[in-house]
Length: 86
Image (cartoon, rainbow, N blue to C red; front, side):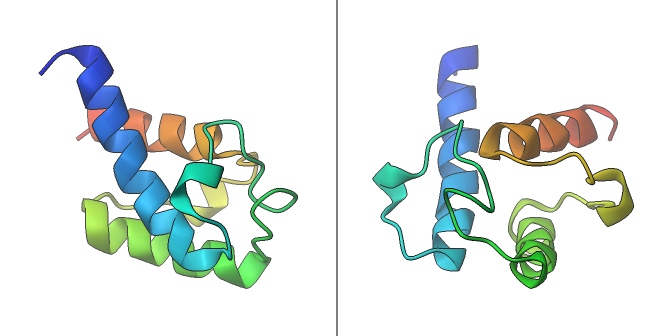
């Protein structure tokens, strides 16, 4: 699996989790989608999303370190950073 396939696989997993918190189809969620503005997530949704990511991807998320997370890309980069530190 090359880096592009790995990227696409990880992004798809993240989008599958995100779609559970929106009224959008998975195709409508892009790497640049804003969590609150485009996806309509609330603060409560974000906490639930974090728990889902932890459960589905096995990555411990630190909510207090995610204050600057605004887009799908921000979450993706955070997860990538957390995975590399494991």
